[in-house]
Amino acid sequence: MPTFKYIIVVVILFIAIGPNDAQSNKKFKRNKGTSKREIKKRQQQAFEQDDMNAFNPKQPMGARRNDNRDDLLWHGETANTVYDGATNISLVNPSRYGLKPGLELSSVILLNYWMPNVYLKKRWRNNKWYVSSKHGLYSATPGLNWANKKNYSSIVDNSEDIPFILSIKNEILVSRLILNNERCGRDKPYIILTGGLGIDFGVPFGDSDLKEMEGHFLANRSPALTGSGYSAYVKARADWQMTPLLMLGGSFKYFRGDFSGNSALEHHVELQTLVLPQFSFSVGYLLSIANYTDTNGTALLPFFDLTYFFGKRQGRQKGLFGKGM
Image 1 (cartoon, rainbow, N blue to C red):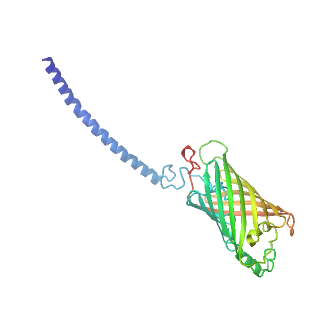
Image 2: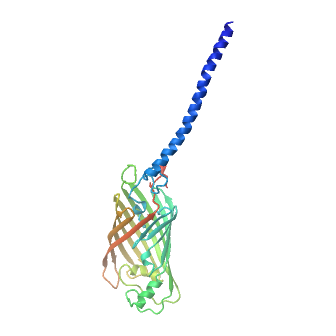
Image 3: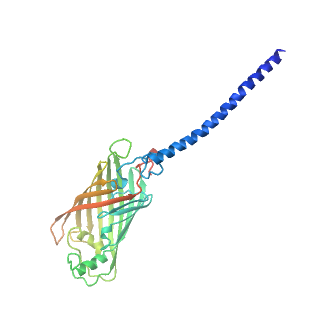
């Protein structure tokens, strides 16, 4: 008889608890479904109302909106490349376009009328040390013909035979990225040190009576431009991000080759700042020191450039765990 009572009590408890559990499960499932819909709804509202939302997929600038650009930090003379889809157009410095990660196409647009040129930079290493190679083709033949017609004797001295000349550039670049502090974000200062080694030479397709070009910034490049030999160089460069919108860069380049004096030293300083989020202005100078036979030992030229940035830019220099992006 006691056993029968226990059975009755268990049955009563089962009947009483069962509906409540079922009701709780239904409520949990309902709340769970509603929660997902609510999250999606809130995300959509955030995306539509705030284009600076950190998780907005419509925001192409990365996790943080910042006027600082990686393609401003990494000068064209460094070993890093612009990322795919990023583009800048400059008057004096090379204009650059990212074909794909680690591969960059560039050209000095202002020179293309006189000297058509195209360069391809391949990045082989992307860490604290950046390693890349740069290869290019250019031809000064259009400019030589133009200078000959204009009687610019310092460039072409009454030459009758100007063949097509194809000049080739090959360069190895190594850069070291140094961060001044450990703060998060892309507004932290950078120092980038770069070393490089390169050689230019020209191949004439036909007979030529071209002579060495005269003057600084021409004579040490004339072997490749006129197809009469080679010009090799070694360079050292430093770039410093003084503020999020201000970069200071400088370089030394030492030339050796088949030109008068057989050696030349060039020094370049450039101060670059963003005046608008996509527009920068650069000012600086170029200094040349060489033992040329036709001119003084030194020459100083002012330098300025305008650059327009467009296309994609990267939100962070590095991803999680220090992996390159």
